[in-house]
Length: 130
Image 1 (tube, rainbow, N blue to C red):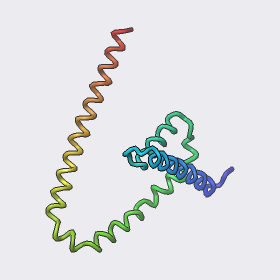
Image 2 (spheres, helix red, strand yellow):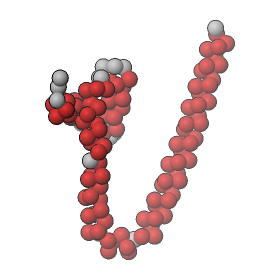
Image 3 (spheres, rainbow, N blue to C red):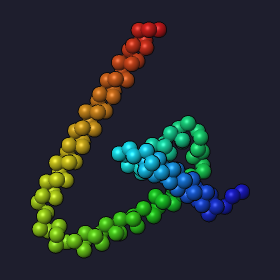
Image 4 (tube, helix red, strand yellow):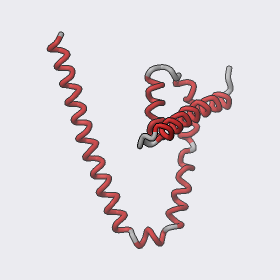
């Protein structure tokens, strides 16, 4: 039986390989798309199509999620470091956060609503044809 450390190492290599390949693809194809998002999409497709087994990456994903709060320490340090700048521009920052969050929620809702309508329309067409 493979030890947990070895399974984590194998999973890490798999995750890094997929991300590296997506970075290369974005770099050499010159498409204006973020490589990390492409990596997530590729990972999802590989898992859905069963090219990649969930067990292969489960241990490393659990480990990453367990220690994820440590990744926010630099954010807190940055906020403390730039407190003066943030304090001077607090109102524009808050307005920006509120407006962009609201806009994102509205656009996401509209998009999801249209996707649901599209799927229902496709089902109705399929039932008509059958």
